Length: 92
Image 1 (cartoon, helix red, strand yellow):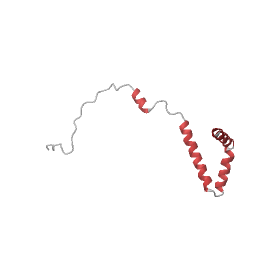
Image 2 (image 1 turned 30 degrees about the vertical axis):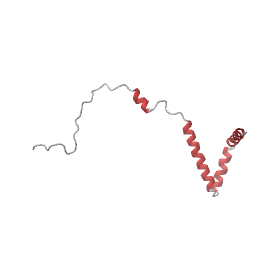
Image 3 (image 1 turned 135 degrees about the vertical axis):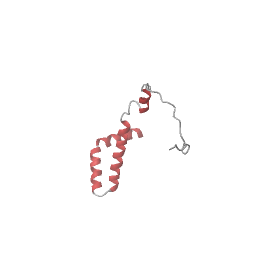
Image 4 (image 1 turned 45 degrees about the vertical axis):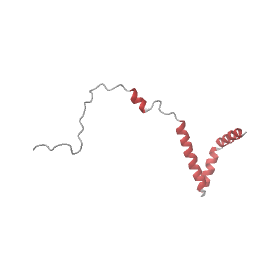
């Protein structure tokens, strides 16, 4: 029964969404800050829901890098590491 009530309530809210938003906007203009907060919260939740519903990239960046061909150019040579203060002064 609860599921049926929820579905009916959501359907009614969807049908009357424009009127609800108009009413909340007017009450916000009239000074009711709670209505303004509710509007902002609803808008943010709607944006979050839309972002979640958007299809993400088919492949991740890591997958793209993994699918790239191996580097065929020059191989890196070993580099010696010089520690701070380990260099002797050069002769002038």
